[in-house]
Amino acid sequence: MADRLFSALLKYWRARRGLTQLDLALAADVSARHLSFLESGRASPSEAMVLRLLAALDVPLRDQNDVLRAARFAPRYAEPALNQLAPAIQQAIDRMLAQQEPYPLTLLDSGYTVVRANRAAGAVFSRFVADPAFLAQPVNLFALVFDPRGARPFIHDWAQVARRMVARLHREVLQRPDAAALASLLDQVLAHPDVPRAWRQPDFSRVSEPTLSLVLERDGLRLGFFTVLTAFSWPQQITLDELRLESYFPLDEATQRACEQLAARCSIAQPLPPEAL
Image (cartoon, rainbow, N blue to C red; front, side):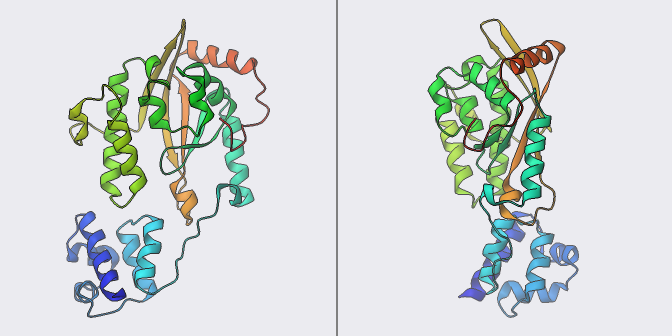
């Protein structure tokens, strides 16, 4: 059964990446004949072979552990809690959060829930939520944009921002069909009021741009940002592999001055603790 499961997972990931057996054999520098034997279950892989094939297929670390188990090998990648990351990583995250002041920076998990945020993020988000109680629970980036209790009423040209975010989420769900949390998040997003039915289908006609522009307006205060999502390179650890940093940068001098004024009204000596936004 384990041999069949490994073979099925190998074929599954090869198909997900749109590769033929020959394509994968060339990418992983193995013979097409041996790869055929592995996929048919006629041969059993070594641990090194499993890792070589998974690297060539760019399989996420969490899924690599599943394939290793299927091939009767121990999982290779740890998944420590956020507060159990190496001290150097913790220090790097703390410094990035602090150095981004007076502009927002958030640390997101694989389901786009905010797990850390600097004080600027807290100051900005608290000014642009319709219901302050919305921030009393763990904040999800998509919920913040799509839920009427969040920032949605104050987002200029909401439809354009929301559509680009939905397109990105569709792509991620297609890339990670096994990620139930992402699929559930997409369902929740599409269930919000006034979300067009056309958004239920992926839109590949739109170019996936590396930045997203966001303009917030409320009671005479207008803040314009462009945001950038970044990831840790070659983390070799599931927790780090799934974390994303979203940085907000001012679009204009007015936003820069407004953020400086917001920062002056609160202490920015230290970033917010993990349990707070």
